[in-house]
Amino acid sequence: MQRLKHNLLFWSEVDAPQNRERIPIPEGVPALCASDIGEDESLAALRDWHPDLLYVHKVTEPRVEARLLDIAPAILFAHDYYGTCISGLKTFKRPTTMPCTRAFGWECLLHYYPNRCGGLNPLTMLKDYSRQSKRLEMLSKYRAILTGSEHMRAEFIRNGINPDKVFNVSLPVVWSGEIAGENGHGELENGNGVGSYTDSRDDFAGTQNNDTGNGESKRWRLLFLGRMSNLKGGETFLEALPTVRASIAKPLRVTFAGDGPQRTEWERKAAKLRAQDSDLEIRFIGWVNDDKLDTVLLDSDLLVMPSLWPEPFGLVGPEAGLRGVPAVAFAVGGIADWLHDGVNGLLASGDPPTSSSLAEAIVRCLRDPAKLAQMRQEARKVAETFSMQRHLSALAKVFEKVAGSAST
Image (cartoon, rainbow, N blue to C red; front, side, top):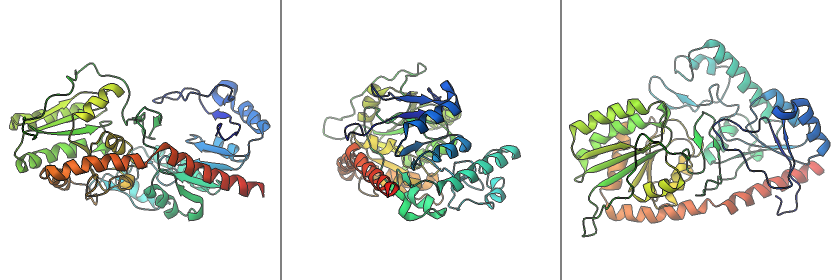
């Protein structure tokens, strides 16, 4: 925007959000922070600045958001299930874990406990329902709503938003950590899909020679990359491994890079699997920084994304694709925007996600080395289409459209 000679101002609720890197503000650009100078003072200063357009991301309090929308025409970038789900997870956990496709409404209260849509505290359920209801009402006040995938665009249209106001601007896929943030559920994503710090519990030895000398690999190398929580599907991945091993001739090495509340449980299950099969190696290397992540990806044949919840996009997949790593994932959420079945990987059925369908997709990739090599090339090509230039161009078109309509 600065290059286009627009004036910018940053307004924020807090200066240093938890689980998120602080956004570097360009030199000479003014910034207002409600937690520093007060909510009323910061909003008054913003109003006095006379903005032509507000570009809004993840304001946490609907009351504050309503005050912002009274100042100037606004565009929302919807990173998650804003105003369309009580818990924001958009997932049924019972009788089996699977994405929810319902439109948001009072009927969601009837499903909340039987389908375990969230926690067990009824007060929290009612509070979250009220907050999300207010957010859904507020969506109509935005001049445009931007999403990072066609799945998310369809989600807002299903919940009553005019299709002419919802635009998919496709998230940019970069390597240097330019995109930083939290996905809405305490899961750190900083441009490579994982936290950029190291874990001292395990040392990663680096790239190992995986060539037999005749052009074939000694073993297949699978990678899980991300936060270790239930909805990320690591347990389902582990359950799929015996079937995978029984279907391929080579030894199998599985690397879990990341951390989270389920790590200890997954390590316990992995230990039992290793004890039953000497040709199955499963290791947990913790979070890795950007330099080590590059090495980890170059030492992997296939990324496995067993997410059970409908990922709004699944950025880690195409980021791995930039390093020529194809992916296997469940067909949930926005993953199909970048994972083209049979081109840069394979989609396993997500209705519902099961370990058997995941195992089948993994085996199909590994059984055909020539096809896998082709998928590596296509993974790069597909990932490169999600460029920063493409994203910024799409943003500029929406900004110009909204600003033009606001001035007439």
